[in-house]
Length: 259
Ligand code: PTJ
Image (tube, rainbow, N blue to C red; front, side, top):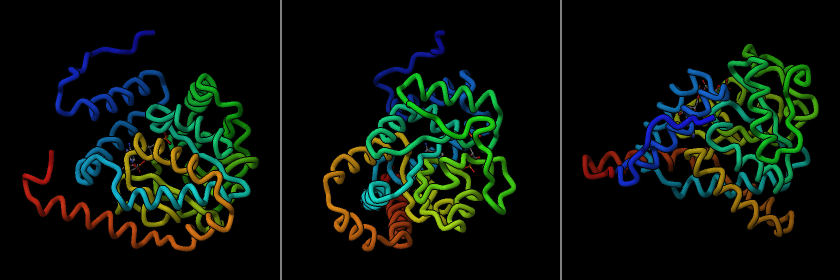
């Protein structure tokens, strides 16, 4: 199936951003992404612009802490929604093998068709087992109204560390209430997800996941005490504040602050 409709000129000044959009549109046409996911991406793009469309120093600090949490976890899990499947499925599969951690499909706009489409997309890229599809999501996150409450007892329900790249806030809050460590990737440092998560990586998921892979590969050989030291030294409030200050600094340079 040829999903390409338009050619993006290589020399376009915003070629990278346009390519990312195209991945989402392709994901939408394949039934992975929901219409609302395209809108959510637009909000993300606006914040990406404000942080300078690069992985900032505070994001790198969060990525380091995220790697330390994932590598010391007893039962880590990677949660995947439609946007993440369209943008970063390959990196999710790589990360799942490297940590190692199972992948669970967990959707806000849940439908069996999308669950299956996302799971088979991940399997086609090498995922061995994908949790959370259909009846497998038989456990319930307490005090959560959305469809995201239904989770796999072998995955998110019993996990100690949950990676939620690109998320809506209510589940992050509920997972933290359950005593879990939540690592979020969210371009909006002011979102509820960003403010509730244990570790918030304020970065585009397309840059954050490759950086997290590199960081996990680098730290994998470290001893447990060294990783726990990274965790103890991490302060998410400070990192969020620093991300906001960077946005402020970019804005205060005025029209010349942006490329
Ligand atoms: O696939 P589903 O059914 O689970 O639905 C997925 C969406 C994204 C539609 C759903 O989770 C949703 O509505 O999310 P929100 O509440 O719009 O939140 C998405 C957050 O992700 C916002 O804070 C955006 O700024 C942020 N965001 C969007 N694109 C990216 C991003 N963060 C990192 N990388 C991106 N590419």
